[in-house]
Image (cartoon, rainbow, N blue to C red):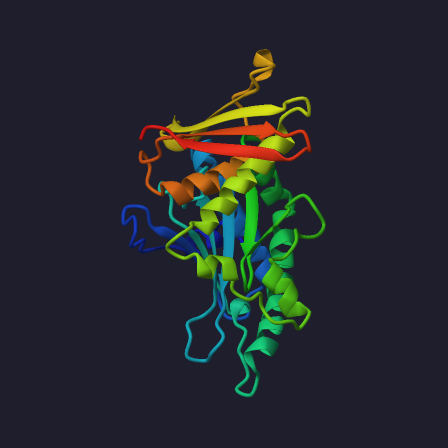
Length: 306
């Protein structure tokens, strides 16, 4: 594929959410080789994405919309940048690749579980080609340029969620639990009875998000911290919504930090997104953890700005 050909076949498609930021689509001819097209696809994604502010390109989410029935449109792969709060970047549309390589028809007599297992294996085969194309010299150089300026996490969608694409590794990260159960021929996870029984009374998802923040704090801070104070507030960084941290131990006031590692930031981002989805509506929280004599931890959470 020549540079001229790739430029001609990139077209704009309407972005209903942000009309002034159209999606960019590369449309392949029937039967056209996938890997060379994916190299061009990666080059466009990584070139255009590099111009975004770092806070607007902390992650890239890849998904494949499979054509499973004859009446469906041709299958399409999409890639969209996510910002530091795991929301789609508003400054740029998504990148699309339309090709019959993303067609996987379900047979009339094929039950859904059998098709689901076949589809999951198919997803992994396609994503392996995505990775091969990314590792090509031209596209890999662009990835390294972006990743070195600000870490870029890539995740790919399957039947039941997302997994870590792990660009620099040979394989992929762990599949979602329901995908693993599907491959093993097991039933999907049942609904959480605690969440069902307490609906409207307790916010079980919030409790679990808070617990993950607590565990991330305990893992991140030095072992000699027996009391942990963590304040999380919202602000702007390069014009984008961002989180700011103040992590301290009263007994060791000189060992505090305003930085968070990846696990803590991911957990805090998910909690803030749950508490206050809209920018400017998060008043801040203060978490206090106290280690007990038996090694367990007690915690308290205070909402600030209320």
